[in-house]
Length: 488
Ligand SMILES: Cc1cc2nc3c(=O)[nH]c(=O)nc-3n(C[C@H](O)[C@H](O)[C@H](O)COP(=O)(O)O)c2cc1C
Ligand code: SF4
Image (cartoon, rainbow, N blue to C red):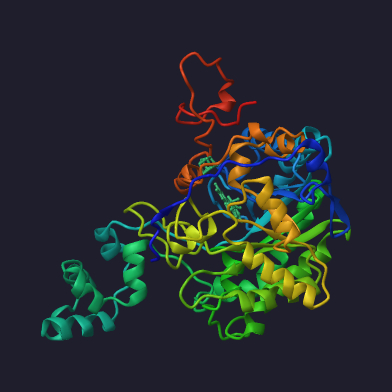
């Protein structure tokens, strides 16, 4: 892991006058498919853990997005929203028609709060199952499927006859008693990982019928979700082809499927192209269909920018209305979770690349990943494609955003954490009041809440202090200690 030894201060800024902002690229309109965003400001998907346990829109979800909409960004992308009708806790879902009414209330609220100035997309996600890290005793008693391979390896380790453990239970008990080094000789690499991190399905587990069937199922799952999003009056959808989830795993250089949906560049691209085609065909032409993908997986053996740029060209040729670029955020290098917790894909080095903090290497977090969107944009333009590219990663100032646009790093600038720290920041900068922007500290307090699936808030505004006027219950977190909505 690279040494994160340099602490980069959040520098003071020179903010533009109202006139300068009005003339800027950042506040100039941009076409996205057949729509036009009023400015090149963009709030990318951020899961705030405010949906109901069944995945429905709640009043808290509505308040959250309406608050962002008051700052009138060009685009808001609603958090990763599940396309598959399976229990997934308080993560929004669009996996059945029963979700449409709630989502329609959300689009109404955003339209009203932004006076129709903000385009609203929803990010569509599919993910595979992941289990919590088990208690070792439970793992050995219940999850480990013992085989003759275990018998043989234990026999080689101990010098005992393989028939010493005629009963599986005796074999389990003997394996459970081994020390870590011996376990490494008796368990398979996958079993060791299941024990130490919790079992996690992969797109390459083609021995499992539902994983083998992914390429057949995914196009309809995404297309149906997009159809529902259109009925709920979203302006468009963003296919989640980034980070640790199914679609990014299919694109990944680590996808070694041998059924035509892995291995080669074309094989890895095949299912994502089929999902894009089905989604495009499912909604009317005036709805936006775009996607978010990785410029670099930031893991050993992962996809690098050269392949990512070629993927982007193919997606644009196939009709993607925008290409949003992120980096990393993988399970492959995630930190070991505590027993009883699940691994989280933003805890390892690739997670740091995805949400860089002030504690960084010499390059620092600010605009850290814009060279990836720049390379992807250049490849698109070389191929004669004008599809807009969205860049992200530590963008926290007018100067940085404006420079990114001027230098061709991207066509639209996404800011997640800075928008969370101050949802009014676009409006303030536009009004020439940049000096009053509440700056993000880039220390990832918000991300730590996300990791624990707690309601996401920001350290810059969530403390409830004695003497504060009382807030409606709906605006206080479940632990009673934090305000849920930025003041102002
Ligand atoms: C709390 C939180 C939740 C996030 N959830 C998502 C998500 O649902 N989908 C996604 O593509 N990215 C997600 N991200 C990543 C952001 O969209 C963004 O790419 C990342 O934070 C880097 O941008 P920034 O430096 O402007 O914050 C999340 C980030 C945070 C902080
Ligand atoms: S919690 Fe910290 S990193 Fe997150 S938005 Fe607020 S200031 Fe930024």
